[in-house]
Image 1: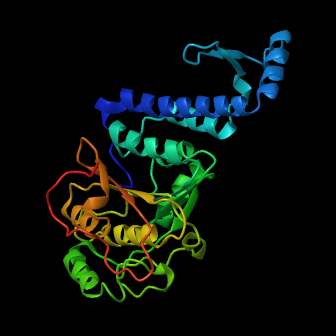
Image 2: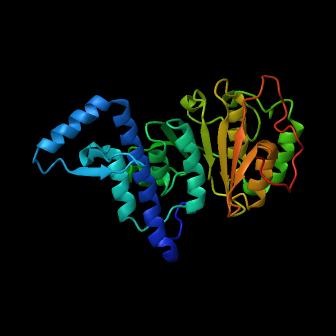
Length: 314
């Protein structure tokens, strides 16, 4: 994930509308769900608003399919959602992913949320990810303390954690061979990352992050576009181990961005596996995996052997 992405003037109008549209839809869904779960309170609020002439209670009629319109007041919209709407309506900065790519993850968050969402990377779309997982836990892992400071000053509500990478992109081949040769030892598929001696394991994270079973993981960092960059080898390996080592739940949805690049693609196939690939973006830059927990003692990551070709599983 580029720390300072260059804005694309051609895409600005559509990009500014996308986050607003997504947040509005999720906001209305949240309000409708709340009113549906407490009809008496909703009716009372509606009655009170109808009889009041106070300018602070502005009524918005929201049509629900072919049924009657549901009255609600603007003041019921949660403050943090309002803040996000204002932010994306007034910024000229474009998100790091395309609209289609963002919607791929948004669809999963809508079906699983509120959930535990771990994001490798911190950027201009971080507030959007947090709002799409409204009422869930969304944590961001970032390699640059200065970038964390800059983003946190604008959005102090984001949960951020510093992460140090000991890998270098030019060592990708050697690290992959290290993992393969230690598949039944240091680099096994099911293990405690906090205690791991595998060179690809991220065991320097905050201890509390290892106590969480993450439902959705997004790998969109660290930098991997020049030889001296850390590369995403450790992030992809650690995400795969987290998904396989969880003890509860029905699997982890893992997204890897920039898979058109050789390292992201080969490491995703090696540790997240083609048989777990359920969706690929039209841009061919984003892969979506569904990884199930593995039994203790399992060493292999993939049932089928990795290959460079093929299509997503159904």
